[in-house]
Length: 486
Image (tube, rainbow, N blue to C red):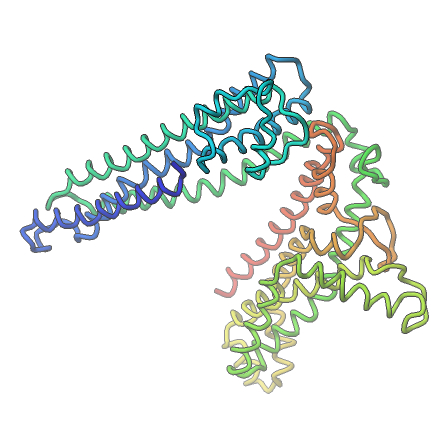
């Protein structure tokens, strides 16, 4: 049974438990809620949570670990047939999963049943037409080994899904029934619900932390493996990058920082001036319209910005600074360049700088403005000599947060800056960044265990350390500011 139907069933059980426990509580209190320890809704919520939480936890864990268990079992079938390298084994498992997906779709559509799938033989029946009907493309003939492994995959998946359905629904019913039986006028349902809510909040916070730890550890493990295959000194101090034999990170870091600096040169003045106008000069009517309109920029997908850079900004800059352009100079030879990506990225960062700066400027106590104006200073002098110095730590923090956002950008750079890894001061040349190289290294044909693929994790770890340092520095400044003016 698909997970969606399982969720619907346990949802219905939970609703029935809520209604039943609520009515049972009222009945035990003889219809007067003053005889109950808690409000009737707490009794219903307790029964609902008792049915939902165990079943949802088991459903999530089973769904996460079942494919891993099945793949481990099926992998032994392929390894027993012949010895394969890690790359060959990975490709073989990809074919097996593709075949298994097609067979499962055939079962779900009613085209075949499980017994017919298990009776198929690769040396008798060509399964490629069947897989084609299911929308699964197979590049070569299906070997008996691959079909046997795929049949084992399907059989284990069907059995696992059946056990999962029975166990999850049983837990939902038993949990709801247990809570229903415990419901009485003296049962402390509110305390039980509050404890469960607190546990859920702690679990949510723990998941966020553990996810971060898991990401960092996975990057560290693969980075260490990369440095076993490639010298660390050549990586950190190398000035050449071709993605295969030369993996020096300096050209990529230079392109990343160069584009980010241009983006900040565009975003910081515009965003800061917009924040000053909106917070100090704009009328309420103008502010209510202009601030949301400005923040719309933050909701535009980065791929749209990338297309804007490729199709509009790049050709415009080429007409201005290219051969035969407005100024008659030959500085720019193509539409993809550092300045193209930097300008468009700066436009994307404007709402980050303006919104954060606007909130920070508004947080400056009004008494400081009133005192300055009372001493005879003009509004502009008050902004320049009182408001801005008071808000400066927070504004610096906003700029650093915008910088970390710029460093991690990918799509704008892919479409606007080009793919050339070079050390150059010319902003009209094409360059590349760390993020674009991570994408290219992981989407190529290189073996995942090779240095050419593992270098993506080293690049990611380098970028993570840089952005983490910027974020920590920005948070330190913002917290210092808040402690001073809250």
